[in-house]
Length: 179
Figure 1 (spheres, rainbow, N blue to C red):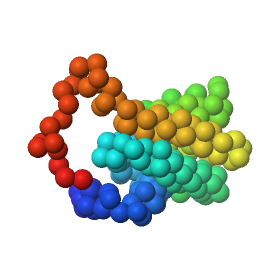
Figure 2 (figure 1 turned 180 degrees about the vertical axis):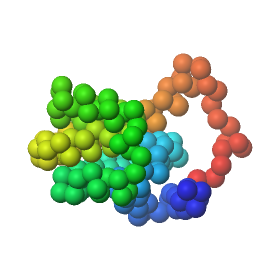
Figure 3 (figure 1 turned 30 degrees about the vertical axis):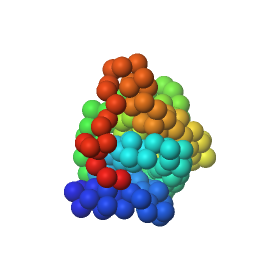
């Protein structure tokens, strides 16, 4: 994880950086190691004027990855899930999601996709239980759009707002790392 973080920091100025982050968050839908919201947050804090661009690429990669995750689970079931995340079905959130999906269906996928938490149990259960893949895909795309555009905007505008209302002091150029 440290190597990925170092790589991202060293290349944040590169024009291909957003696409690399997009690929990284797509892959994370299957390895569950990369804190996607934190990657977006730190990228936007480093370059606030690029928040829309970064939010778009993170949203795109994460949405495609989530839809692929749902498709693979719909086709290969619990066997695929236990191969990549052997303990997910034993987690308490798994039982909660199962209950909530029984009650509310695909809306639970949408709800989890809007929150800064892992939506994998909800997506997995929705796909395994046979909910419509197009409906799951729409819930993922719209929910993650809300999540990542909100995180991107907050990361871009909150520091300046906190300085304006005098909660934070303006940063001295001497203490800021070079970009």
